[in-house]
Amino acid sequence: MDILKAATDWAKAELVSTPFFMLFGLAFLVASFSFWQLGKTDMARAYIIPTLVAGSLLLIIGLGLFFTNKSRIPQFEKAYQADAPAFVASELERAEATLKEYDTVVFKAIPIIIVVCALVLLFVSTPIWRASMITTIAMLVAILLVDGTAHARIDSYNKELQLAAKEMKK
Image 1 (tube, rainbow, N blue to C red):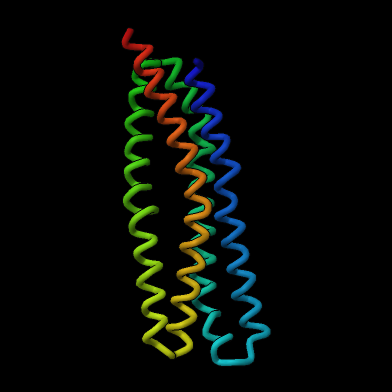
Image 2 (spheres, one colour):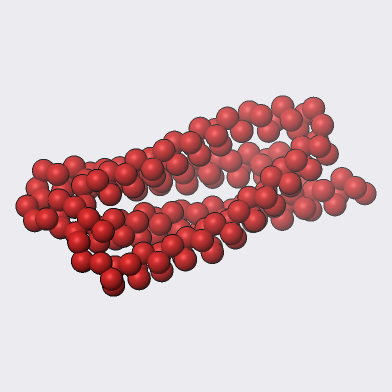
């Protein structure tokens, strides 16, 4: 098993996945612009700021993850060549920490926030609150879609790292 290839493949897969955050962000920004230009009702105009904020956040998340993972690819080879067991240990630690974050944030906190936003929708009737809650739900669903696949990839990568660590101990 070539753990350097597995690490590089994981990072390259992330480079394909993270632009989806940017695509969702651009979609929200286009929606914001459209509400600004075409919105005639109070409800349509209420979406301008929430979709602008959500689009900006998704764009920032996507760009940040893209450049972080892009810079990892050359670092992987250098770290592996310098000390393979230390590379595997540090990657294993990072992957396990990331998996714990996914379990806490993506698969627990985000669904709770979605439920809270849905409940708020039941009790508010002002356009800005309704638009904000609906936009928040839509943004969080987009995050769940992208991070659900990212979780599967890093879980698989983590298992490969565990096997590599066991082989290096022998």
